[in-house]
Image 1 (cartoon, rainbow, N blue to C red):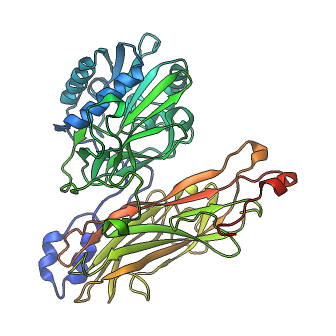
Image 2: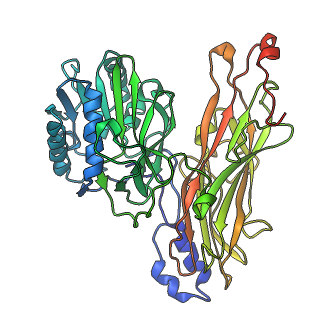
Image 3: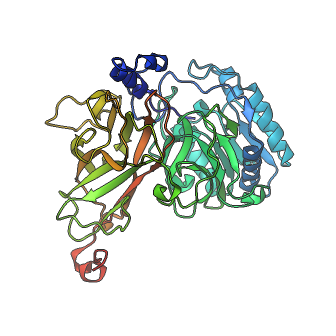
Length: 493
């Protein structure tokens, strides 16, 4: 339940931009008007009280815990309630006793004997499965023991953002999201914020009595836990509406890992009537308005990925020094889908996960321009590059500190914007490095992702939309002597 940034900058801009002609929008004023860092958990935010347990999500969680136990019967439950009772935190003031009691009841119903702990016990070998719920009980110092326990045949259940605290030391609601350091045993390499509704990916996951496409929970806004960049061998059991993973399994050594976002429903907007297809086909086939992240190679770079949402750079030649642009499109905002038109747009595009191999060298905000989304005079609340703490990058001669691009703008025109395609922004990157097989490095792969989006109409009402994220792959270089047998041809050659 990690919260990345303050929401609804756009509604504030809508209010300002419309005051002359639409003063009734004052009802939609919000207090937030800035963004914060891209470091995963936002400082000062606390997990809400647990209120509504989803029977279907609990059934999946119970099946996951039993699978991780792999025939064993003893469970160590490192719970939030006991951890915060032993060491209170201002970041997590909620009463977690109902959650503790619910989880104990759930695990016992699966035939497990449960011992509870405020911190990770020193001797894990006596337990078949360890359930890690308490964020602040997890530290990088514990990670080697957890890794060894799984490799030796133990099972681990990880809940929400607890995995981030095994990768990064923190006692606040701020931590990193890049999980590449634990991906070998965890089974994925990136943590994200997400929300909306979540759905079962296949019938009877791990034997649970759930049907394919069955709804699990609805998340509160876009502050819920999600996982992306899955490792080979990980099995996704359920997804959020945007395609992020809600639950998955992974095996490492002799042991098993199960991760689930939550079993608690939040106060989200009403769920969509139909779950998204598992493979996330283009949203235009679903008849929805959507943002699309579309990387474009700049000559002489050649993209061998046939998808408009993917970029793959091969070797040879060397990718270093070549450029590409990430285009962010707003698609399907037609008269039929948005009869009153679009009046405000906001997106946050976080690229901190690719900075080891790429650097930003420029951007063009396309709103209000030819081929761009929106029309008429625009008022901006956000526009440009920002650093990891959410501070704007003022020095346009160097974007070395930039980790995200954000724009929030609204029109004061009397008519909204409609089109089947409008550009929001173009962000240009230079590739500064390439993995090397000579150094035992594999291809670099990561998402090009919008971490927050908003879309509003004439009176500030939310316009439903979906996201199609992009991907970037930089293939590893290899010794020149192998070039003849290893070179790949571009698509269509």
